[in-house]
View (cartoon, rainbow, N blue to C red):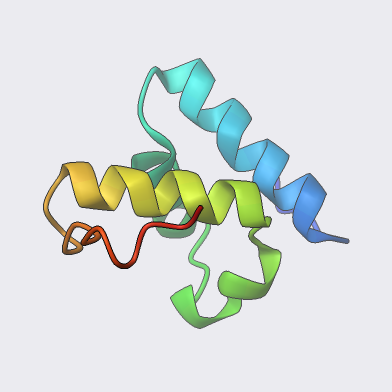
Amino acid sequence: MDKEIFWNAIDFSTMIENLAWEKNIDVLEALTVFVTENSIEEETIPPLLTPALKMKIEEEARKRYIMPKKTTEEIDL
């Protein structure tokens, strides 16, 4: 993948979602692949994630038991 400058969170998040679709992997894996292949420090990633992509990553992490499941009191209504 070409080294690109990420101008905003929408462009970066779109690129991660496209990578996930192209490789038939989930977005959490796509993010890991992208960071590894491009030697990007993980600390630079959070500002580049859209709220929608953050939610997808959180859902995938919960499915994989990386994050605890929400209790009924924590569910956003």
